[in-house]
Amino acid sequence: KSFNFYIMIKKLINIVAFLMFCICVQAQHDVHYTMFMFNKIAINPAYAGSKEVFTMSGHYRNQWPGIKGAPQTFTFSAHTPMFKKKTGIGLSIIADKIGMVNTYYTDLSYAYRIKLDKEKTLSIGVMAQFQYGRINWQESDPLDAGDNFVPSVSSNKLSPNFGMGAYYQAKNYYVGFSVPRVFKTTIYDDNPIEYVGLSSIRSSYLMAGFVARLSRNVKL
Image (cartoon, rainbow, N blue to C red; front, side, top):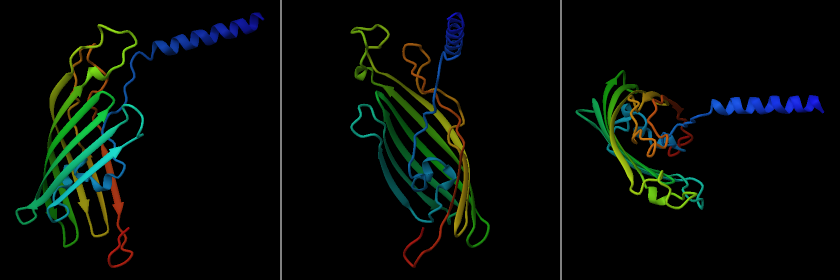
């Protein structure tokens, strides 16, 4: 019995020691794209103008429908080549909602396109980004009514940022690398009452793809 008691005390000490190191846990909050290959401009500014014609696209993603506060994302983008297709410009607007947290991104992209040969192009791009975050505290469900730690008004903040990337495109394949957000700026105030752990992170994206023509009108 004394041996079992010793083991139980040891486990309890280990659990307490572990919890002491778990003061704050944060996860990445970059917007998720299930089919990123149809929305490269939102991730890599060097993609602007790569379609060789004016292109617009829109995407809507609703994850876990029926669950309150489930993630929802809407994206609209447009880009086009300019100046004899030597440059490209693009616009991307993103609205992301998770629970009572709403985040909006507006990206302006510019790409300088280098024609290596008839079928290969290397693009270097930069983007200016404006991030707007809003926490609607009225949607919160506190355990105790009138909790003073839950603000009575919405929290919001506008934060600028910029990104960069490179994109190499050949006839049957492409490769790209980008850092959409260079600054680790926080969208929300660091006030302990308002802070919800959604600060910007510096994520890097590596993309690649291969296109195979199955028939005259079908590509995989």
